[in-house]
Image (tube, rainbow, N blue to C red; front, top):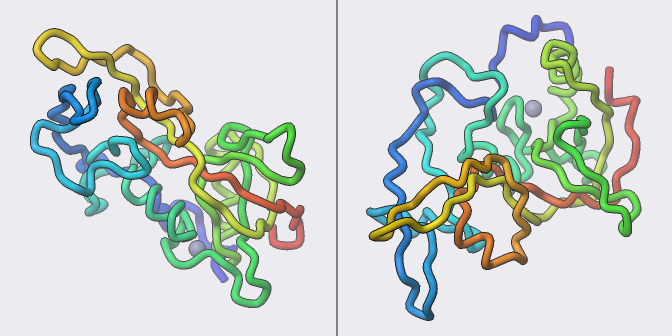
Amino acid sequence: MTGNAPPQLRIPYVIAHADEGAPQPLRFARRPLGGLRLTYRNPRRSDVIHGVLRARVMNHRRGAPQWRKLNTLRQWLCMERTLCQVCGLEATDPATGRIPWITTATAFRDIPDVPNSGYTSAPATCRACIPESLSMCPQLHVSSAVYTVARSEPAAVLADMFTPGAGGLAVHTGEHNVLVGLNEPALLRRALATQLIVQIHDLQPAPHLAG
Ligand SMILES: [Zn+2]
C-alpha cells in the first residue's frame, strides 16, 4: 500500500510533462465522399480514432510535470484499457471484477436519464493508489468521491475546434475543451481531440476504499 507515501514522491502516470509536446502540422483535406476534415499534413493511421483526429504528443515523461494537464496518449490508454491514472497498471479489482473510480466535480457529469451513470474525463484509479490520489485532491483544489463502476465505454472527446481557412489552412476557433460526442460526425471532423471521455456504468459509492 502506498497510502502513507508523500504525494510528491510519485508523478501520476497520466500527467503531462513539459518536453512531451509534438509538432501539430494541421490542415483541412477534402474527403473522398465530399466535405472537408481536419488532418495532419503527414497523416498516420494512428492519428484518427473513433472518427476523430487525436492530438499528437510524445510519450517519454521527460521534463517538468504539468500538474493541471494530462498527456493525451496516456489518458487515452488509461480510458481504453482501464488503466490506473496514477500507476498505469490495470485498475480493475481482481477480487470483485469492479473498477474503482474517483470522481471529481470538474471531471464528472451526470446523465439525467440514466441513473448511476455518468461521463468522465478522469481515468480510473486502482485500489492501491486511491489513498495517495485522494491526498492530492486538496492540493489540486478539487473535491472528490470514491465509487466502483461495472464498466466503461468511450462516449465523447474533449477537443480544440478548427475551421477551414484559405488553401486548406486549419484555423483554431479559439474553443478549447469542447465536449463532442462520438455520435456527432460533423463536429468530429473539425475537432482535435485532447482527451477521451468515457461513460461509466453502475456507479456504487465505495467510501471504504478511501483508506
Ligand atoms: Zn494504481
